[in-house]
Image (cartoon, rainbow, N blue to C red; front, side, top):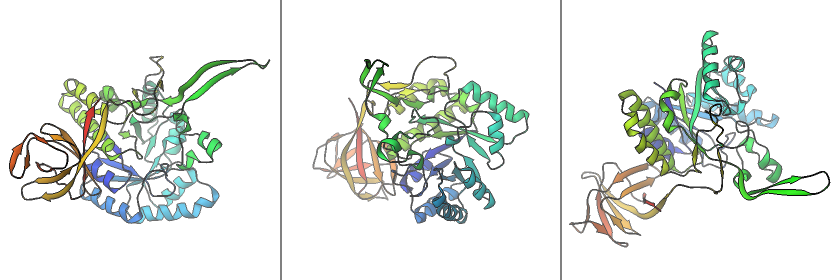
Length: 403
């Protein structure tokens, strides 16, 4: 069965991903990771996360996938040695020298998407170092099938990993210099300021000094997000591992995206995928997204572009609203006491988020105030709610409201 790989920006994200069906997570330390602006892991937190994963028979992959400069080599060596001692299951690597060092240490290597692997011969080259490669994001599904077939014909033992959900950018497999050029913030070292997400003017300048303003104030460089939820059966036939983008995203994104794709994969196996697909699509509409598209996977079959163009940022009709925090949890009866800063109703679905709890979602079936059953609790009240999940004091409570 295909592996489901989810992002983890910190220990809470790791726990959330595994509790919602991920087989593995990918994460980074605070250096040499392609998401330098994310929270990322301290070394002791990563060790704790690896122990949590291995106790559940899950896997943790460490991203060491930035561009490596000469003065980075000593730090890289230290990180790889730490990864080995911490029993990381694999390292995701971009630099060929880093691959060589990792292999010498006996670490499993996964080749990053930034290597822009577009054919079977290049994939075969990287098989000298790696167990798995992430192919170029610019490939169609037809091209990926051809690569898979030719690797098999040439008896190359190499796993293929592909993105199924998350943000895309206009750069070739993430190789971008726009942020570096404009702001001296190196995207290839994980420090991108995402100037592509801003509005731009497109001007056609002529040799005689005249010009035409083709477009003003549009998001010309901002692609829609990738979403392959409608194509899970055919993706399973091609990839060994499905990857969800999002190490910089909020923890509720990790929860819902991981849970939805887990259920989608399982529904293909049990034959219920078709009937459940509308529900899967609705669930993914609840998380931050720039509109959805299938990226390059079907570019050989359609001329549809994937630029968002008219809108900046999130287009989800759902908004996350904080309604309170947990002030007590009575473990024997499974009841949380919540102090409200907004109204709450029986039937509402709540997100409860905390550093140890991660992110859990519950539908409120009953509520009590001072021992009396109620259907609506008001701002300022302390309300008791029966929960299936263990939550903790100071966890924050949110609801999703549709515009």
